[in-house]
Amino acid sequence: MATLPLTTDEKLQPLPEHTARLTTPTAASHVFRGDTRGDAQTGCHGEGRSHPVLSRDLLDRAAHAGVAALTGGLSPTSVALAIMDWTLHMAVAPGKLLELSTAAALAGAEVSYDAMRATVAEPRREHAPGDPRFAGDDWAAWPFHVYRDGFLRLQHWWESATTAIPGVERHHEELVRFLARQWLDACSPSNFVATNPVVQRAAWSSGGTSFVTGALHWLADLRDLVHGRPGGEHAYPSEWQPGKHVAITPGKVIWRSELCELLQYAPTTLTVATEPILIVPSWIMKYYILDLQPHDSLIRYLVDAGYTVYTISWRNPGEAFRDVGLEAYLQEGLLAALAQVRERDAQQVHMVGYCLGGTLLAIAAAALVRDGRGDELKTVTLLAAQTDFTEPGELGLFIDASELAALDALMWRQGYLDGAQMSAAFQLLKSRDLIWSRMMSEYLLGRRSQPNDLMAWNADTTRLPYRMHSEYLTSLFLDNDLAEGRYCVGGRPVALSDIEAPMFVVGTERDHVSPWRSVYKLHLLTHNELTFLLTAGGHNAGIVSQPGHPDRYYRCATRAAGEPYRGRQEFLAANEPVDGSWWPRWNAWLREHSDGEAPGRTIVDGLDDAPGTYVFER
Image (tube, rainbow, N blue to C red; front, side):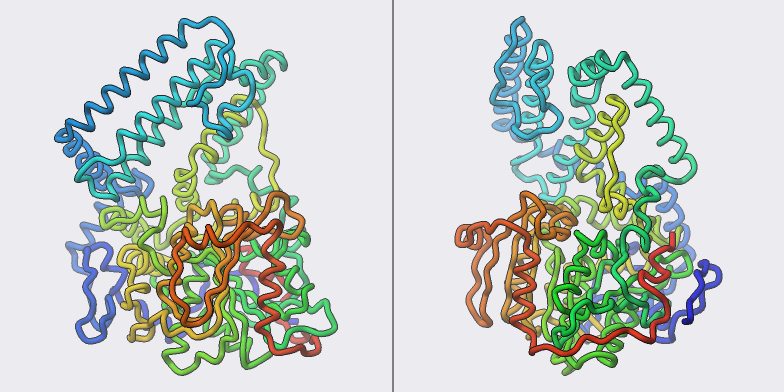
């Protein structure tokens, strides 16, 4: 059995000729120059023109990269413009100022009244139910209820002060509200020993050892940060190693390119569905989020349900991949893997895409139909994947021309976007839970979070090539080219409305990466049969939602081909929640769209055992 040894970036061989043709400085230069105009003949952004990098561009990029390195890739100009927009419009909104002044005076009077009360206070209306920062009866005692309620009033006041200001540009309003929330979350009384009764009780009952343990945790994390391990060694423990504890579904690597490996899993049933399943995970993550432990592995579930399952395992790129573009991921990754599956297994394939992999799959499906190859796809399933980016949720806070110029310059200098930099952005979006609550638990209470398989996977970060990520952020996030018919494959635009294969689309209720209301917009862009399912949970936990998982439910509805559009609120009103995992509902849908069964086949010609080699690259 042949194996491919792990290679360093310096030892990488050149990518195929098709990929090499994508390395001219075209679309990646657009972000920096602010040039988003399309080619007049093709209608494609960045097609048909070359942009040589001039010396002044190099100087400007170097300057931007220096600033971005100091700010972690954030644009201080974008922040300054948002604050200025909000400040200037607030200055000419006397009605709003009067409303805020009145609210501040009333809140101050209530705080003063509460401060004079020396008895246990009843929970007030300001206490947000379910807010983990103020859970427990200790917060109802004086003076801690004063701290709590005063802070929550202040939080409510700032929410009002940063919204509904006449004339403020929407993106600036959202950014100012985000900045205010970051400041408030940092100042929460739950973050300080003197104002947190839970911390004080833990210190008293432990004789102060909780502080000692917390200090040791802080020192350990500081050491890991200094040594380039920002997540801490405890975030990726040895008991969750791929191939030993997670990603252990039996299978083999049956094909390998410079961009990805193709894994095929061994059947566990005598017969399987005629059409195989090919999974396209996001390249922003390791594929094995869909193959954790056997009990919560979606891949194991599909294999046991009687399917031949393939998945792509993307490479973790380094600087040598800096000029690999999005088209290479499409042609040399997804479509090349699809060709391998069809050659080995069947003429039609059930395709599944997760997150950015789902966006890439939607592009591929449209391109295949355009080129007369739409019959290669039996069905298309998109898991938490956006195709219209006009409502990207809080992730859109980091997407504007100024922000992308800073991020582009930072990636240009590095050759890639590092996984730790991506993690920092996601942590800011949920700083209350991922930063401050964790710090209180680990440093003030001395309690380490017990890692699980999903947490260990989340700490196993990946990098993104410079050009690919610049093209993705500019063409899709900033310009929304895919939804508006300007995104090109092979120099020609593609349209999602051309897709004919039945689609199963999954959104999750608390998704801050691909908000379900944005995912739902695919209804506006297609006319084929489309089943939309909304499930409980977030971007990852909502998808990894195995049968038996507690507190899971979903809503589901199918739009027949050609039926009129139904809005999001109509979808919610017309479909009652169904208790349980959504996996069996999807399995039933796949069976309805499969053409019978075939004997399961043992894999005999693999290159390596699953999970392959690329999954171990750091």
